Length: 457
Image: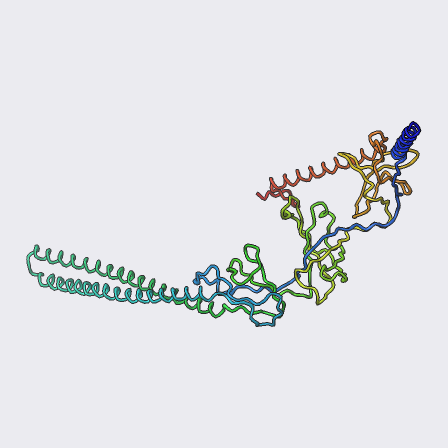
C-alpha cells in the first residue's frame, strides 16, 4: 500500500515536470518566420469585375409621330415584344405599341373636329346675318344724306333760318353715315376674325387627326438594321417588357449593339482609382468561358464617384475596350479584369504581410543581432508585394510574425518618418495654394492678356 502510494506521487511529479518543461520551451523558443528583401521586377495590378456591352449601338425608339405637337399622348404601353437576344434583319418586327390608346384619342379628336366644323358654319352664318343688318343700315344712312342734300338745294330761296336748319340736318345725317361706315368696317373685321378662329380651330383638329393616323400606322416598331435585340431599361430601372410604358421623354425601347466592338464596364473603389489611367493594358477573362483570355485597355475613367449599393463606399466607373473579337461574346456577360497599373523592373520588394502600421508609422521587424523595428518609406503595391523606397537593403531579413513584447523593441529610421512628414506638409501646402489661386480667379474673373488684365465679370 505504501509502495503504491509512492509510485503515484512519483508519477505525478514527473508529469508536472514534463508540463513545466514544455511550457518553458514553448515560451522561450518561438520560431520566427522570416523572408529576405529582394530586388527585382514587380507588376502592379488592380482586379475588378465588369460587364460586357457594345461600344456602339443603334437605338430603337418610339415613333417620332408620338412627339407631335397636336397628338397629346404623353406615354404609351408596349403590347407585344420580340424575345430579347433575337438576331434580326433590317425591317423585321421588334415591338407593337398599344393601339387602344390611339383609338380612344382618335375617336375624341374626330368628335372635336365635328364640333369645330359646326362652330365654323355657325360663325359664317352669324357673320352674314350681322353684316347684312349693318349693310341695310348703311344704305338707309346713305339715302338720308341724299335726301337732306335735296332739301338744302331746294331751300336756297327760303329764309336764312330755314336754310340753316336744312344744313344742320344734312350735317347730322352725314355724320351718322360716317359712323355707320366705321361701325360696318369694325363689325366686318370682328366677323372675319371669328370665322378665321373657327377655321383655324378646325384646321388644328384635322391636323391632330392626321398626326394620330400617322402614329397609328407607326405603332409597329421595326429594326432599322441587322443586329441582336437588347432591351433597354424603363424609368424605374427594370428591363423593358410587355406592359412597360415608354414616352418621348423615355424613348429607347431596345438597342442593336455592334458586337464587333465590345467594352467591359466596371467600377473601381476610391482607394485604387488614382492608379487607373487611360491607355493602361488589361487582361480579361469571361466567367462563362474561363479558358478564354482577352486583351484590352482602359478607355475612360469617370471623374465623379457614385455610392456603392448598400454601402458607404464610393466607386468610379471605368470603361475597358476589348481588342479581341469573338462571336461567343454577348452583352451582359461578366468579365474578370486585371488592369496593369504599373511595372517596375528593378525595385526592392517585400511581402505586404510583413508590414505593420500604427497611427503614424509604417514599419517592419528586422532580424539582425537583435530584433529591431525599422521605419520604412513604401511605394506601390500589388496583391502580394510592396515596393520599399527607403529603410531596407537587399538581403535584409524581415520577420513575418510580430515578436513578443513589441513595445520593448528598439525603433530606428526616424529620419525617414521626418522626411515623410515634411513631404506630406509640402503636398498639403501646394494643394492649399492651388485652391486659393483657383478661388481668386473664380471670384475676380480676371483674364491675363498680352495688353494687361481683362475683367470678365
